[in-house]
Length: 257
Length: 380
Ligand SMILES: Nc1ncnc2c1ncn2[C@@H]1O[C@H](COP(=O)(O)OP(=O)(O)O)[C@@H](O)[C@H]1O
Ligand SMILES: [Mg+2]
Image (cartoon, each protein chain N blue to C red):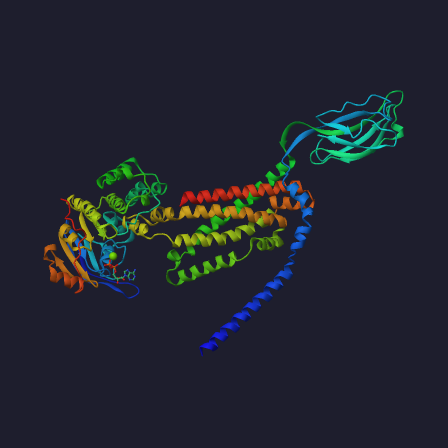
């Protein structure tokens, strides 16, 4: 179980991105974080693996205090938390294979990894990860030769190399064509069914209804909602997104079953 | 109100125009531009241009051969020589002559640019020197000769015109000039290579200090960042040639001073380019690899290096190319290598050898230009 307690983040320039946010995530949940841009979703996700250090508050993973971890403990914790990004964050000039293998750096022998030497079993693991997202045939392509949807699948494969228990996904489909959104989210859904906890920020309400097991909503860094997706009705929606907001759908099509 | 501002504008523009005119007229005078002379003196350039089109590339071994031909004086006193049609040979404008008559003597297919002694071999075997001549680049000479009474036919035996000529034999080989040019060209290329290599080793680490996304953090970082950038900018504003003269005061003119001068300028230039390349990297992959639990060195190696190495390599090759040109010019003022060789030959008026050097420079610069463009194309 992941337990976020009174998490607050004030950036050096004074922006208060998170204010006393608390919630729990049970193992195996698909928790979706919603909120307008600037509401603090990215900051929240990055505090969980401490890409950003919170100003105050605690994050416990079972008994482990992530917020108090030393740099080397932190690297061990991060190995078990995969992350998927809106902009994919691949090394564009490197091959798909190298990008996927780099997800394993936390486990690899540091010296061999710097020489670019990977044991056969790790290469096998990378191929397997690519097979799980259906693009094993692209292993030798340069990352930037792939379409956006394919790049995000490489991003997921890279996270899979960590054999993660938690996957943090920061607007994983926001840079993609809406029609590709379901395809990417279905991979995350599958991983969730395979036992990984998923914490994912999303924009479109129809996607939230389709994939989330639970939802929290942020507004100006404050948690304004926590509950089941079906509890977000029109009134709640207006409260989270403001009076002028219109509900839009990612796709007019329903997700293929 | 509006008219006044119009008038102001008109006056200002007229003044500006007048000023520009003065500047241009003065510049024209100072530069001594003289188009008429360009045309008038064109013939002077002709030989130089011909020499340039005719670089000294090949040579053949030479052998001393005594050529001779019978020359009856007066006509009919003895059989005339059969004129040869090819090979190293002598030829006269007339087959025989009366005493004191003048005629032309020509030599063909002899060693180029060699000195040849021409003489009479009198019927009694004595030798009588006529002249010393110089063959041209094609191994040809022509000289006017007088039919001396002393060389008259005696008892039906004619005098011979003889020449100890150097004649080329054997296959074509690269000329001495060619070998010298190659050796000096290599010196130039290696000077540029050394300068570029040392500069890369120095500039690569320093460039991180001048990259805002790496260094510009906190008070000390900001100072280091601006300090490093200023150093690069100041060093960059010096001409390598000026720098070479400065180093020469201290080390004497030679390849070392030239190489150091190029190194300093290249450090500044590469440092700036490298730091700009580092500043433009995508921070996304760094964040992504930190999130996987990779350590700092692994993150740099997998997320930063692939983004900057292609740029770095193309900048290095490009600067090597530039440095070959600069080193040619530094050589010209005494820095060694092909530039120095070229200047020496020009001072000696050895235009064909100079031409060989210039051709070598042109070819090497073009080849490197092509190479560096090709490398850059591959790497992007
Ligand atoms: N590095 C930063 N420095 C200062 N302010 C930041 C930084 N990153 C984000 N912010 C601010 O913090 C707030 C929350 O941002 P973010 O977590 O990116 O929101 P979201 O992901 O929901 O769009 C915004 O007001 C944003 O401008
Ligand atoms: Mg965000």
